[in-house]
Image 1 (cartoon, rainbow over the protein chains, first blue to last red):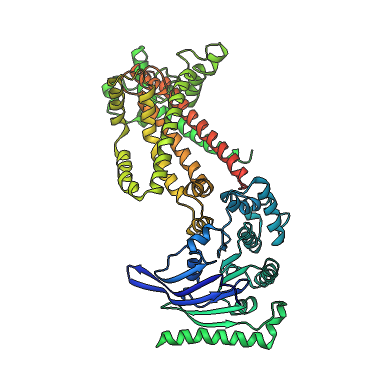
Image 2 (image 1 turned 90 degrees about the vertical axis):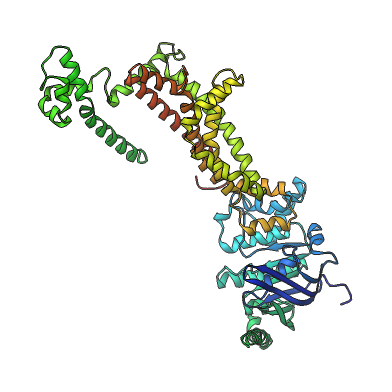
Length: 262
Length: 310
């Protein structure tokens, strides 16, 4: 690809100073993410995958190295509405309706009333929640709530979608369904997606690029470019390629552990 | 009706206990009075009776028990006596068209209510302002909170006369303002503590979410912190308004106030009319109940609008 990467990290480090001494959450992380890629970050707890996502979002400040988002600093990119962020918990405001929750970023960003309505209707359709605009969060299932929170992140048309274990708290069946829907959404909107997960099948099924990370210090141990086609039915998970990639991810995770044991 | 039943049962129990206590509390007064009227009681002589226990006196004079329920100045009036005194100084006066005369509890209740509400408004403003300051500036928490806590350890009955005297010294006319200050002093604290908790109730994730929108501090206050604090606000408002009422009544007790429920209690004490004291007490309790109920209704309507089961 000739275009500049959307997200570019070079020798990125982040050290937290705690009472128990310094913790290297990230050490020398170098990674380029191109436009339109679906990148998964996988690794055990403490490997820095969430921290890296939060650095991209400007929620954490790296202590070393460089990081650009759309060619800007993460803070500047955030102000330019470069990304939408989806957290592990849907985090919908219980006192707002689904429509009201999706309207929240639009209100803050100063969209006109008419445009707010138009956008809420559009993203609700995108996540297949049309007709639920006037419902309150407690009236929806966990999966539906997470879809609403994805709609909220999509509502202001950021090019990048950052997702921090968005389906981690959902059961397997709902998760499969949402994974499928997320791929369709990605194909339709052509967004660049950064996706943190604990699940190997989820990472392999969704991603064009899988970043395997290991803890203490948090670093990248393997980057796998997926040979799977963009069009992926659920049963692709039984194919030989799929199983091979899953193997390589597992090996990467194990290698990270073995190193730690030494 | 099903909801009212437990309340009515408790009310009936309290009433029964109260009536049962009346002969015990009043028998001495009743015997003293009867003896003074020249009737024979057993045993005779106030000093002799002082040596005997109340149950013994009741056993010796079973014929006098009925009178203990009808004394004009009892130690403990019956609920019926209190209610009829309350009616005589409120409802009955309204029917006569004198509902707002200076002898009516409605007039005195209104005086107390007015001070309570202005004190409550003052305390609410102080409590909210303090909570917002503490939420946004750590240094305020460290400098303000110890004083707020110390302020609540000073007995209000000691402080109230000082506030009244000081405010008259600096030329404040009437008792409205000092009373409001005293009630604000009592009610700001629960509101402060509740709102500090409420404004800090949003999770880190909710605050991060607003950060990803580059929301200003003002926006995160209006869109997140304030709405998230509503359940805490109403809980502390209910405590606060009851405290404000107590503060006003305490403010009406010292140094010769002549109007307000607190003044009625004091005057009733000075003139030895227990029925008036009890009627004023009951009126204060009813007033407190009405205020809390009103807040409860506001809370229900707010919660319903926010889609929560009320």
